[in-house]
Image (cartoon, rainbow over all chains, first blue to last red):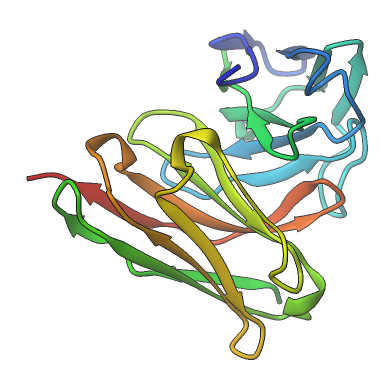
Amino acid sequence: QSALTQPDSVSGSPGQSITISCTGTSSDVGSDNSVSWYQQYPGKAPKLMIYQVSIRPSGVSSRFSGSKSGNTASLTISGLQAEDEADYYCCSHTTRITYLFGTGTKVTVL
Amino acid sequence: EVQLVESGGGLVQPGGSLRLSCVASGFTFNNYWMHWVRQAPGKGLVWVSHIKTDGTTTTYADFVQGRFTISRDNAKNTVYLQMNSLRDDDTAVYFCTRGQNGARDFWGQGTLVTVSS
């Protein structure tokens, strides 16, 4: 598998909640709890938003939450704000001791 | 403050070589695994390689096997990526990142590698 599967785009109005899915296999997403999520603005370096499926690093808004069920992980952004408009990537450790990123999702705030 | 500063990118012809460097500061370098991640223009993030704290373990994505070599010098707080036999599709921004809790918690600003004749 070359990349985890994410929707190309997700949109929502300010204040709404959106969820981005990240689908893999039993050899990556489903193998352990190493799923992480990254936010990236155009021309900038990615920023870690969630690690170990659902843990927020210090300084990341509580509006961001993560979960996992089987081979699919999810990132939920609640209370959507204009500043959340960015690209989001999931990432998972694999059983081959490598890492696999998702295809990326562009979040648009309407 | 954690800082990762990459250098060494540039324009190289197909089949050529480049060595990227990443100097770390603001943390105890030899306590962390280090990774390289790349992003082709307009495309998504792709994990390239990582190296253990003491340099004894390295792993690579399938597409770079045998062409790229990751290494580190803990005395210089620096991680390297030696890239040989470069191809057009290696054109990308290469990010140096720190590994922590199975994630990459700090990223450099990246260095652009362009492979073109």
